[in-house]
Image 1 (cartoon, rainbow, N blue to C red):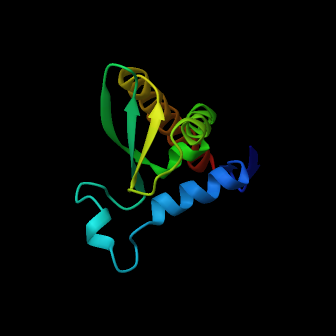
Image 2 (cartoon, rainbow, N blue to C red; image 1 turned 90 degrees about the horizontal axis):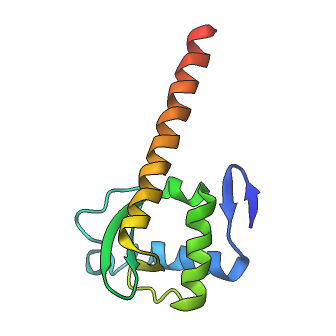
Length: 121
């Protein structure tokens, strides 16, 4: 992984497959692959372990989270990116939920810091 412009770049082949999966259907087949509940700037992840699977709508900002990036790399090795619009990661759904909550918390703290800095100017 390499940080470029604040975004982690996955290993070249993993990144290209992820990009293809996220962009799939933006041409002619958009309605076929794009879920109605997925807002712009988000994508679908299925957290799956042996016992259960759960669907999450994840903001693109998670691509800056090293834990999430590691999960994507594991997913590429275990499942590949099949291009159906959702990415399956090998993680218990409750653990994935905690990763997302931590990401949202960290982003909120960053936003507060930015506001405080701009108030001082």
